[in-house]
Image (cartoon, rainbow, N blue to C red; front, top):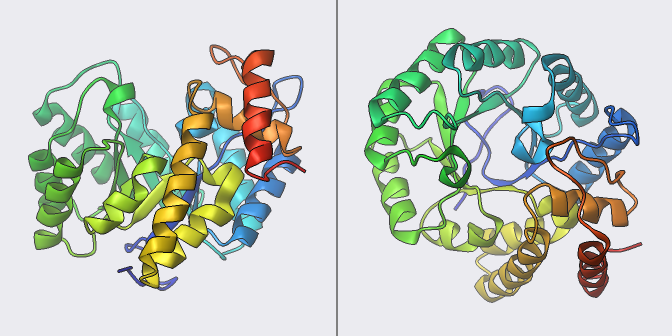
Length: 308
């Protein structure tokens, strides 16, 4: 049910739970690197298979290149080879995406996450050529990230299959479509030509359906606050303890619904604040939840036993 990998196999991503890390800021809006280091350490102790830094959950669009590289450096330092680290490197300007790909690869990222360009609304041919240009910029592997709710366009399965055939540097897909028929076809079609290709869910509540369809795990927001639950679900699935996996998946779905009442990462950052793991500071245009929303989060997290 899972892929195996070795540290020397740079082009094979481990299956399982990858945490899309938040970026803690201090009260002045600057990077809170000690809090970030503590979060990295805690995630690894909880048993996640990998970490993703500077993704949308990490407010990457509000980070400078210098800040992105600082976060990646700290994550790599504290991970210390125990888990691989993926760095967000997406941009809706192809040349900028190429530069970010190069920078993150040179800084030591195991792979990068390349988002479908947002706002531009490119054609399928434009999407194909965008990812090909990113791949040609350096040898660092990448995952294509399909997130139509944010990007405004959906990358077709045929386009992903075409990329898989012609772009060996693309080693995985993060797909935020919670659509069983699409994902079933995607997993099946990719496996025919690239058995090493990892398909990860971009939706926490859809991890179990994707695993049942032959997928390989999730890049998780919920794991920021409940990594142990996510890891237990993964282990239950691998051990064929299906009923336990179902129960955990239900718990995770309810928690995801609580955290996503506000635009991500507003809810999860507020939850980490209530757990004493991060300041409740976001960079505009994101803004912290109001007191009523905070109280709803506090009640829910308390019911889940997640508050200190």
